[in-house]
Length: 109
Image (cartoon, rainbow, N blue to C red):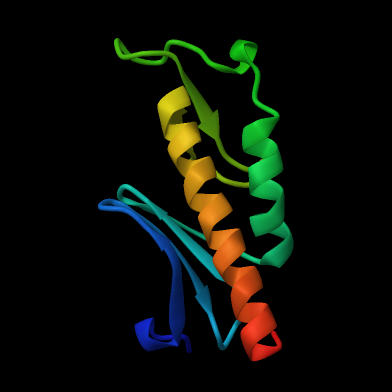
């Protein structure tokens, strides 16, 4: 069972964080009050999904700005994100990928 001490924080802001578990090798993406556990392939693919979003993918779900709902086909829960949220998440992902690559070089991972 993984514990908090098994996680290496790769990227962090005030309300968001990406970490990698040394035991199970999964990533934890905490965005606001949501947490996604992603394997290596899912983690690498989420950036492509975010970059592939077009203006047509964003709808008015609430009275706020246009948003997109991200979820996989099996989930009944998803993340509702604005374009600004997407930009923040992409920045977080870029930093996390860079740090993870550096760890791989230093610690032969």
